[in-house]
Length: 556
Image 1 (spheres, helix red, strand yellow):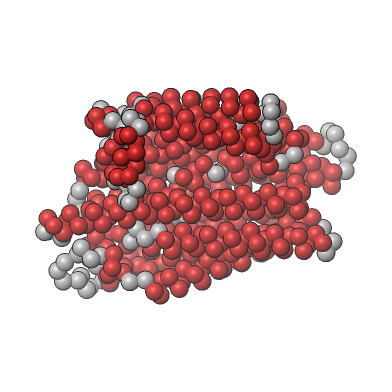
Image 2 (cartoon, rainbow, N blue to C red):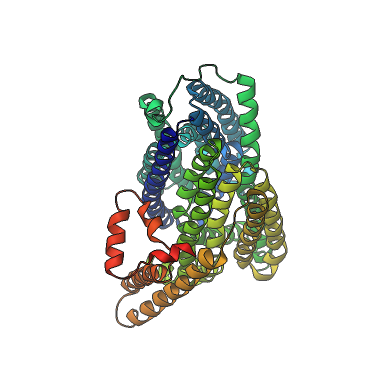
C-alpha cells in the first residue's frame, strides 16, 4: 500500500474498528459478567458452600488445561491474520485458519481424554472428580472456539466473539441452574449437584462453537480489506512456515497465560492440604475436615468472583489492541503505534484505579447485599486485601498485549514466572500461620511483582514512555475521592435505609464523583473523546457546557 490516500483509509478503518470493537466487547463483557455473577450466586444458594467448593475445584482444573491448550492461540492467529490482512494476502488468511483449526482440533480431543482419564488425580478432593468429567468436553469445544475467535480478532471484528460469549453465559446460567436444581430435588449428593451445575458450561461452550462456525460461513473477508488496492498476493506462505510461526507465537503466549491458572491449581492443592492440616486438630472425621475446607475454599472463590469483575472493562482493550498495533507496525507507522500504546495504558488506569479503591472501601457492603451476614463478615477482609490487585491485573492484561504486539511475547513468561514462584511460597509458608488470608496476600504480592516487571520490559524493550502524573497520579487522586464518596454516602444512608439500597446509592455517588474528578484534573482530553465514534462529539459539547473539559490539558 503506497498511495497516501490508501494509507489514510487503512488508519481510519483500523482506528474505527479498534474503538468500536472495544466498545462492543466491553458492553457484552459487562452483560456476561452480570450473568456469571447471577449464576454463581444462584448456584451457591442451590448447592451450598461445600458444593461450590467442588464446583470451583473442577472449574480451576478445566481453566488450567484450557489455558495450557489454547491461551496463545487466538492471539497468535490474530497476529498472523492481521499481518496477512495488512499485506492483502487473502490466501495466507485462509491457510492460517485451516491449519490452526486442524491442529487444535487434535489438541482438544487429547485434552478432553486426558481430563476424563485422570480426573481422580486432578481433583483437589476425591468427590470433585465427577464435576471434572462433566466439564471435560468443554476443552474440545473451546479449542475450536479459540481458532474462530482469533480469526475474527485478526480482522478487528469483535461482534461474533461478543455475541458467542453471551450465548455461552446465558446457556450456563439457564442450563446450569436447571441441572443443579434437578439434582438437588432428585436427592443427589452435593458433589453430583456440583457436577450437574457445571454441565451448563459444557453445553454453553458447544452452542458457542456452533454459532461461531455459522458466523465464519457468512463472513466476507474482503469487506474488511477495502482499502487495499492492486493485485492480490495469490501465492500463499508454505504450510511448514505457517505452522512454525504459529507455534513460535502461540507457545510463549500460552506459557505466559497458563502459568497463572496453573499456579492456581497448585495453590488449590497446597491451600487445601495446609488447611486440612490446620483443621485436623479440631475435627477427627475426614469427611468433616473435607466439608470445612471446601466451605472455606468456596468462601475464597466467592471473593474471587467480585475480584474478577472490574478487569472485564480492560480485557476488550487488550483483546482489540494486539491486531491494531500489529497491523500498524506492519505498515511501518511507529508514531501511531506509540500513540495507541500510551492511550491504552492511560485508559486502563482510568478504569482500574477507581475499581481498586472502591472495591476495598465497599467490600463488606457489597457482600452483605448478596450473601448472608456471616458470609459477608468472613469474606469482606479477603476481598479488601485483594482489591488493590485489581489495578495490577488490569495493567498486566494491557502490558502483556503490548509486549506481544511489539514482538516480545516471551518476556511476560519471565514476569509471570517470578510472580507465580512468590505466590506459591507465600501460600505454602503463610497458610499454617494466617489460614485462608495467605491466599489473599499471595495474590496481591504476585500481581504487583508481575506488573512491575512487565512495566520495566515495556520501557526498556518496546520503548513505551510513561508519564506518571497524567497516567497514574491524576486517576489515583480521583480514585481516592471516589472511594471516600462511596463509603461516606453509604455510611450515612445505612443509618436510615437498607444495606442494599445504601450500597447502590454509595456506588452511584462514587461514579459521579469520579467522572467529575477525571475531567476536572484534565485526565481525559477533548481530542481523545472525539475518537469515540457516534457519541464523542456529543460528549464534548455536554462537558464544555458544564465547564468540565479543557483542551489544553492534553498537551502536557
